[in-house]
Structures are given as structure tokens and as C-alpha cells.
Image (cartoon, rainbow, N blue to C red; front, side):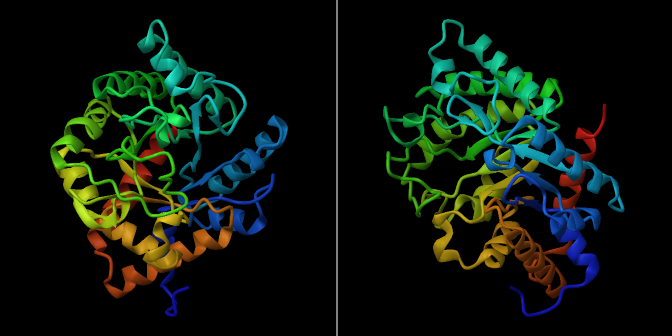
Length: 343
């Protein structure tokens, strides 16, 4: 935790970049108080938060009511992972995994149906952001991303087409899509899981841009609202830092080279891949400095989100984070939140 007390104004600004999580089936009072104070951008929900549709509905109502009491009254980003297949936090569509969609008789139609189904499931539960689709292009059968059927194909043009069909259909129904994991986990071997440990993907730059990034060019052209950065290290771009902590990746590749203007979001801030990069506060500041707008605090611990927010606020007060860039990041997040609150 920071040793310096941040200003109230900076703490509120910082909170508007934090996605909280919580344990159990009911949002705890301290989280609701944080939301009412305007110090949260959103909440990520997991299966343990939704043991039944009724309990999920009640929890979402509490979260939304707290947001309405905040000074701005701007809606929260309420999100989950609803990719399809085995990776579904809520019961319901999409039933098909990405691999099943890629193998369908009409893959584009199946991808669009899955995107619309995901939107229906999430919107029906009161959620407005899906941390999907996965745009990783697998390079070997049964590698990390293919084993769990999370990749549409080993061909970048197919992933580009199907991922864009999914996100377009979903966003047309009012649920924001998140393209992940930039610039691609498709070359990770079966045991290379960034949730557990540091992963280095020594892909040549030409291949990374031709294969890994191609689906993102299509997704950006298709209007994807969020992009999640990977926690893997890509030596061709930055030999020292995971993508989500690297300005060369986030600002250089995603923003300047590919022209993305939407909201960037980290993967889980508690991931094992970040073990060498300090505590929650250190990671939060490093991610913000790299250009990540939203910080995903998904350890089901309210204190994790608080620690990230306080570290950001202290760094902002002390000049460790650029005030103009900080304001721009908050602005992008607020714009997304406001747009998702419209009928």
C-alpha cells in the first residue's frame, strides 16, 4: 500500500479506472460505498457471484443502484467472460466454443449467432461488457489456446472474419466487446499460461504483425470497443516487460501503429506472470504508465481494487503518472460507460 495519502480528487479519478471484483453472491457494503463515492469504473462477475439467476439479478440491481447514487450517475461497466463453450461464467449462449464455430458449416453465420447469443445472455442479466472474443491465432494443434477451444483457427484471416462477426453482432445489441489477448497468445505452448507464470513468446516481428495482429486490424476497423493486452513478453517488441506493462506494445503497436482509439484493459492484475513486477500498486502504476486505461482487479478481493486505486492516485499526485494522459484515459472509460447507459 502507498505510504503517502493521496488527495481525494486524485483518488476519485483513479477509481474511475478500476474494475473491482468480490467474493460470494452479494456485493459487500464496502464495495457499494466505493461505487457510491464515484471511485469505481466497473465490476467483473464470476460464477461464484451468480449461483442462481435470481441472486445474480439481485446483485446487479444493488450495483446499479449504488452507481446511480454516485456524483456522476454514470453507469458501471458490468462484465464477465462469456466466450462460448467451456468459457462461460453465466449459463446460456453462446454454446459453441470458438473452435466449434470455426469448424461449422457456415462459420461466419455461427460466429454472428454466438455474438448475438452472448449479448442476449449478458444483457438479460443486466451486464454490458463481454471480455470476448478471443482473437488468438493458434500455431499448433492442442497448444495453450487451442486446447481449451478458444481459437477460431490457425489462419489469421479466418480469425479476423469470425472474431469481427462475433463482436459486431454482439455490439449491435448494446453489449461492448473486448478483443483479446493483444498482440496474440496463439504461439504459447500447452503449459504456457500467463495466469500462472511468466511466458516469453519469441515470435519474429514480421510474423507477429502478419499473424498475431491481423485479427486486431479487422476488429478495430469493425469498431471493437475494448482491447485486452496479453501478459506474455514479446521480445520483438519489448524484451523486458509483458505486453500490458509495455508502452512499446500498448502505445506503439496498438495505439499508433494500428490506430485503436477505444478503451484498453489489462488482463487479471493478480496473474502469476507479474510476480517479478511488484505488488498490486506497482503493477497498477506500471500498467497505467504503459497506456492501459482500465485495470482488472479480479482476485475477488475488494482490497486489491483499493490498493490499485490508491497507488494510481499517489503516483498522479507525485508526478509519477502524466496528468494529461491520466485524464485522457479516464475520459475514454467515461465515454464508454456513458454510451452503454443509453437505451
